[in-house]
Structure formats: C-alpha cells, structure tokens
Length: 203
Image (cartoon, rainbow, N blue to C red; front, side, top):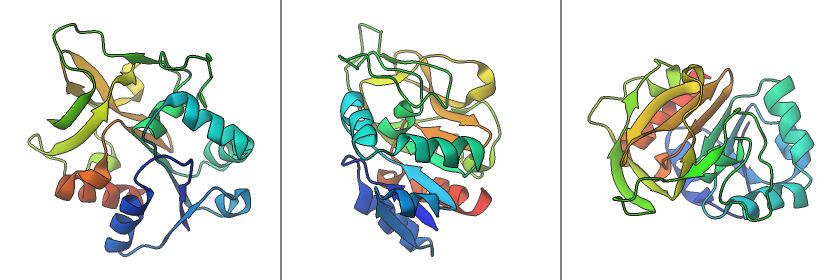
C-alpha cells in the first residue's frame, strides 16, 4: 500500500493522481495505523519547515515514521519540503526545530547574491550517482522547482544529482531506502511521471 503522508502541505491530490495514472493505488493519510501498513511512503511538502515538522509532531507521527524508515526499511520519497524535513535541521526554522535526521545534512538558504530567491521554474539535474530512481532520466530532462532553501553540500555518497542555480546544490539525495528530491515531480510532466514510476516500480 502506497501512503502519501498528509502534513497539511503539498500537492497531495496531484501526487495521488500521478500514482493512479501509473496504475497504483495511493492513500492520503496522517493516521498512524494506515502509515504502519504502508509498503511505500511519499512525504510531500510545500511551505515552511517549522510548519511541516510541527504537524508531524502534532499528529504524533515521528516514532511511526522513524520505525518505518529506519527499522522496516520502507522506501520513502521526500518531495521538496518533505526532503528537507528528512534532513537534520533548516536555516528557515525560527524555533530551531530539528528535522527527522534521516539524511545527515542541514538545509541552508541560497547564498549567491546574484540569483532570485526563491528559485521558481524549470531546471535540469546532473546525475552524480546512478540509482533506480533516475532510470531513463536524460540530461535534458526538466523538473519544476519552487524553493528558497536546499540541502547543504553533503557527503557525495548521499548525493545522486545536483542542480545549478547560482552554484551546484544537491537536488536528489539517497541513503539506502530513503530518497529525496528538491523539485516537484508531480508538476514536472513526463520527466516527473517517469521519476515517480521509477520509485513505484524499482523500490
């Protein structure tokens, strides 16, 4: 069972529509009992880091998500804010809220002075590590981004792709069963459909 975790942020319906288009069933839920039954989890998100993490705490989902991700090794795909919440912390957090810490890397604000923040629109990715999530992703494949913060440059072992926006930043993270993308596959037309298909069929 594919569960899209409902943290009151993100294009939940759009993600579910793509999953259904690909021939799979998906449930949008913040119910711990439903999440415990998941064979795959999608953690989406649009908005503020603090809001997303507070919602996870409010729904008492941290322990359940940690068990699924770290002990059961359930495949998890974090999207945009969802990926950032899988990191250790974020410069966006005014309350110094901690992230899930599944990726041992903080989230920082774009530093280049000559770029517009947020990055909003289409961009490409440069694959640095061949993983099943990126199967058939070509160099000219374009993905939709909308963000002011990004994962800091981490150990190359967990960077599967980078994107250039003023400088190269990690746009796809991977650690065993844990995957994160800074862009929105549900808004990225054929390229996004291909990526979600890879997640559903190859993990």
